[in-house]
Length: 439
Image (cartoon, rainbow, N blue to C red; front, side, top):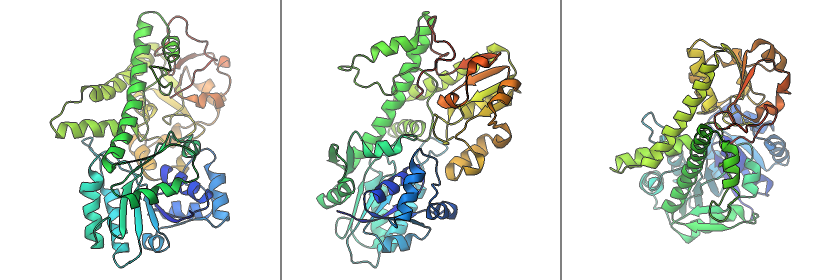
């Protein structure tokens, strides 16, 4: 069944979802308050960097199945379903800021006030359990003047897309998850994914929300666990990479190899935010989340281990290879490399940064806002000439797989700290030209 869909919020999740839905034959309108994003989409240019996305987006714009607008009322009038994919960032105290998603729900409600046609709102944004029922649904009912479950349906559909592999993740998900409190909402939302050959799970809205947070918390926990094992292995004179490689061979009990490779600290726009949200919510409920708190503390400790390595080296002119939280994306939000760079600059180090995926002029939205606050002079720190960095640096810090587009490090006469290996590797560590996968 092909549908007329409005996707509200054209960031990473929204752009990928809208483009894939259009590719599958649906008529899709992407909605965003940023006219630059909308103009970019209508010109067939992706406003976000994601491998394979721009060509796919352009093909759908050219085919007439995808377009952008800043007018949410227009999008609602021309659709039967709205998929909400706006951000839910952390507030200063670690709780979740729901202002944007709440504003979108209220806008959708006002647009639907005079309509008599059935309409479904599917929230893809990350929500804590209970927010959809206790915050968004009352706001929607007040704005429309109608009860949810009559002509208007509301449900959630958590996403499990990873930047750099988002299109593949969309096409080959572990499962599709819909949280719905009515059969009608579940059937309509699940119809979006009729072309996908995977397990399809319908549960309550609260359970679906909790699955999303549990997954992200578990991923963050796995990274921190592997990093702590790596650090302990190094203290015992062995190689954490080798230890965890063997541990991961047990696929009967240890289950998954994903995120279980010692390396550098985790970051990005999901894991830190979602773990903070769980910790804050637990505190508000009078509960203690020792493990959750430990995840964040352990991640900070791992970052401090990296700073200690740099300080002990003694070099003052440093080249940092990889600024985004992982190779293949330009997302700088809560990247540990940004914090590392910020700290080193504050301590008087001279710094050059090589990251072929990061262009300051292309950064938009929350990503641009974050880096303007954290590294306002990023443009003059970025260096796209590998030889210049080799010539001007005493020490290279390798943080992500961006090094594979940097060139042969064996020609560098100085020292190299590979944060994906040197924080955890023991006496059997690899030569500097042999790099291990990053998170």
